[in-house]
Length: 391
Image 1: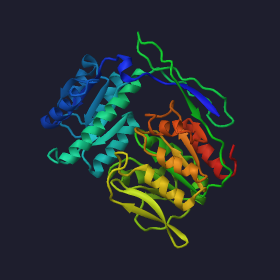
Image 2: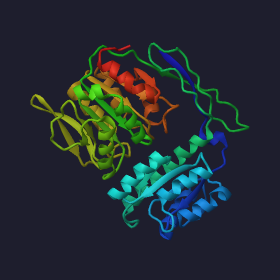
Image 3: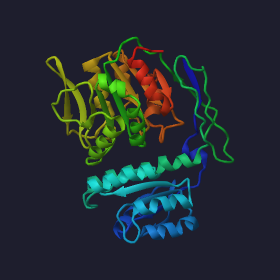
Image 4: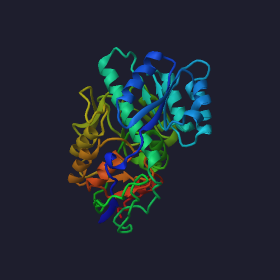
């Protein structure tokens, strides 16, 4: 089945004004560093550099930013307290929480997501550590750019699920600015039939927007978790994955934990790739075990989704159902191809419900998906596929 999708023009053709960014941090050094990085990008501009949450709240209407980079720990009014006040003054703000890697800050970042923050980013312990600063810079700029771009696209009306039984064609409105001609280029999204192979494991990959999407998914797949193992790679740093595992356990009502190198993979468990390590699986006699490694980043990520997907295809071959949720980049696309080549199935989250349609979009455009679904339809579909309904 083919699905026609109007593709947006390149950024140069859209002629948007630069995204307006407010930087809020009590450290003058951090404010200056972030501001210089942003100003070096032609599509971004700093409209305010502010020391406290209180000043940010007082100035947000006047300054009118599109995106705020908001520190958590500040005097007078901290980030988590300022967050709802900022959103009250400007509802469509993109707010990215910034914090150092402590358990307390990780917990606050998760709370911020539930209060309306768009994303979070961990700050390096020291800006003098060049490699950490470079990663922080790249991740921050990409988050600002991709999340801010969502403000400038027409709303995408959630479509019927894209599966072999769905309507044959869906057209998305082009994302254009006033005075820009609509694009004429079209691409085809190929949706494959589900293979008849019964899945024996559920794999999930996600990134930006993933924590909220994962909570939605695991809350609806209890019967699957009870009978099959579930392995998840979410792009996330250490400490944050510890907290995420606890949230997944509460949302699902089933055991969830950061995976441990060498442990057996068993039904009834959710295994989460620990921050800073790639998670693979391997055969150990008649058993399947977790294999963690501290190798270099893959697709600019660690943990990355592709290593999990590729290794799982070797172990379970056709007995895989993989789900790719919201996220920046294309991590998971190559692994998804490997899974389908082995006889497994892949489901992607649709664009309308994704915070960023990077990872699921890459999988969809690769032509390996058996379904492209809104988030609230993915869990029911997973349950049906594991129960034997493939259509």
